[in-house]
Amino acid sequence: MSGRAAAVALMCALLAQACSVARLPETAATGEQTATQHRLDAADCKAEVGYRHNYNGDDSPLANALRNVFVLGTSGAALGGFLTGLPTTVAASTASDGLIAGAGAGGIAGGAISVSGYSRFEREWIACMESRGYRIVATPPAIN
Image (cartoon, rainbow, N blue to C red; front, side, top):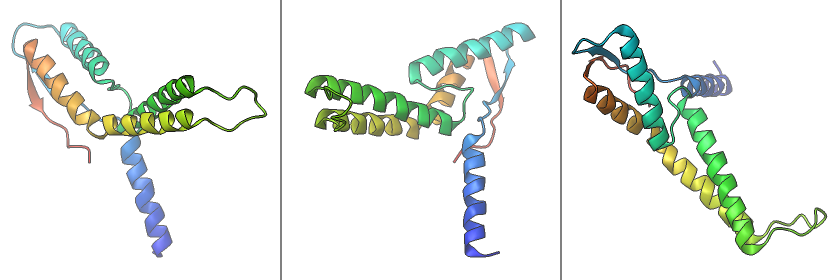
């Protein structure tokens, strides 16, 4: 295999892993929760923790990172453009310094939030499930 083919194969493997949705640990009820209650508690914890950490447990880590970078980058650009002024006409398509700086700062913040997003999400989800009377049965392999 040539060097280029090996690099392409490695890149495809990394992207496939980054695009896969991470599985949360399996849990078992320690009380008398029904299967329906177990499913509802797992979904409720996923939604609650996801809201607090700005992480969607149904998306891949890559999708979460791209969303954070895009949303915070766009928000930063809007704030920077508001503070320094947006271009007055479409023909004058030069971006203001505030627009550029805001987009950069927002993008960096989105990337920084995403670095440990899944591990924080998983830790909090486990704590939420344990507080509702479940125990961890098996932990899936870690995402690198």
